[in-house]
Amino acid sequence: LESNYREDAAGKRGFITSVPPEIGQLANLQILSLADNALSGLVPMQLGDLVSLRRLQLSGNFFESQLPSSMGRLELLEELDISFNWLSSTIPPEWGNMASLTSLLLQSNYNDNNGYFTWGIKRGLPTELGHMKNLELINLADNYITGTLVTEI
Image (cartoon, rainbow, N blue to C red; front, side, top):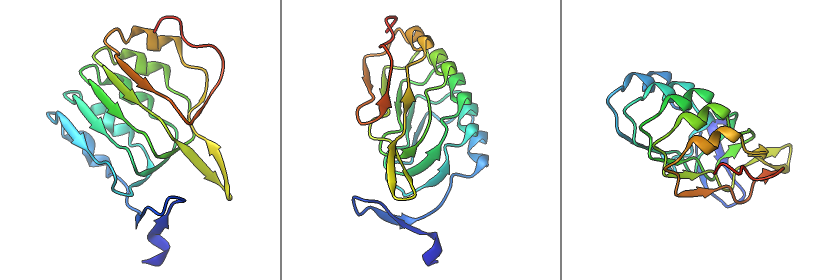
């Protein structure tokens, strides 16, 4: 079991588990909170199948790599929190389709690359985020956003 155990720099510990792909079969689910569970692996692309979802909380885990573009299908989603993970990604332009989103929290994502921490949400913001007319809160602190801010927001 020791090989399935992880501890981050802040001392958060847990067994490494991933979210099963069958999660996408919960089509009527409205709230999903998997925060602070030491989950790892990729943010499952099957989350894009949860078209009734209104709140998604994935913060405080060890999710890595890319944010799935499939989540752009979550047009009813109001709150999205994927902060405090180990992501290394850009924000997919398809996320601009999340027209109901009021809160987008992606702060403090970083990736441990052989002992070197690199900031996880990278490059500029896609102009498609300007389609999120209900957006009231966006937190991208402690990432590596470059370029100009999207004037459409």
